[in-house]
Amino acid sequence: MALRRAAHQIYDSPVVFDDPIAVGILGETYAEQLRRTPLRPDRPFSTALRAFLVARSRYAEDKLQQAVSRGVEQYVLLGAGLDTFAYRNPFAKLRVFEVDHPATQQWKRELLQRNNIAIPNSVAYTPVDFERHSLAEELGVAGFDSHAPVFFAWLGVVPYLTLEAFRATLGFISAQRPGGGLTLDYGQPRSTLPQLEQMELDSLASRVEKAGEPFQLFFTPPEMAAELSRFHSVEDLGAAEINARYFSERSDQLKMRGSAARFLSAWL
Picture (cartoon, rainbow, N blue to C red):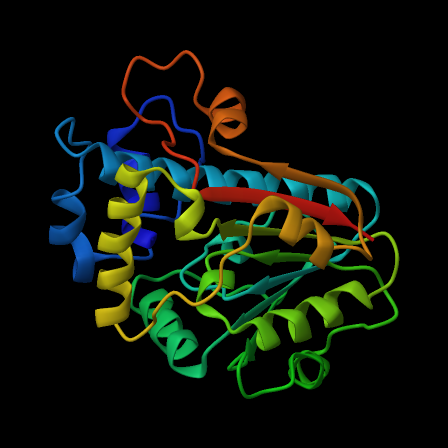
């Protein structure tokens, strides 16, 4: 994911998601892999995946900006990975909580140090295994204020969870103070997709399973809407809406394809 966000800064014009740290955080360690990731007209699925990832980050930060304009001063990244927002945060009062597996956080901090990217005082690392740890307890240890509204970004995580873990985390989010909100992405079930998209999903699922993180959880839009009954002003976007918002009038082939992936935001 980080390689594709970085490649977008180098190979795509105009950029949809402007991230001046995306390349720097990878450094020389991943420079050769980055050089191998320009747009490939003969690989439309790879291009669509890059479009999905950069649009997802852009959408999340657009929604965060809305939250800040409403007075939110806490931002929780669930499954932060190599997200760079905390290191280019333009909001003076915004506290950022990066939630992720301890090993992933250690790897990220090593990359930040190796590539001379300063860690601001406004970021708090919160190590959590979503299947085993209490999100509420670990955020409390990190200094999270449960009496103030908060905006959550839950990107690239939901498909890997059990339904029980998803509902437990969503329950915690929905119990927060009014005024905050949530953005997430999710995938539709294989059975709802056309045959070619089923084949593409099978290929991607095979790769992530070999990496030790198999897909487990999918929703149709009505099913997801039912899970979000405690939220209001839900926006659930498919590829056509996302392309119209972020990829219209481009001269290259960068755009989302198919119907599997969806972006969602909702408010408390």
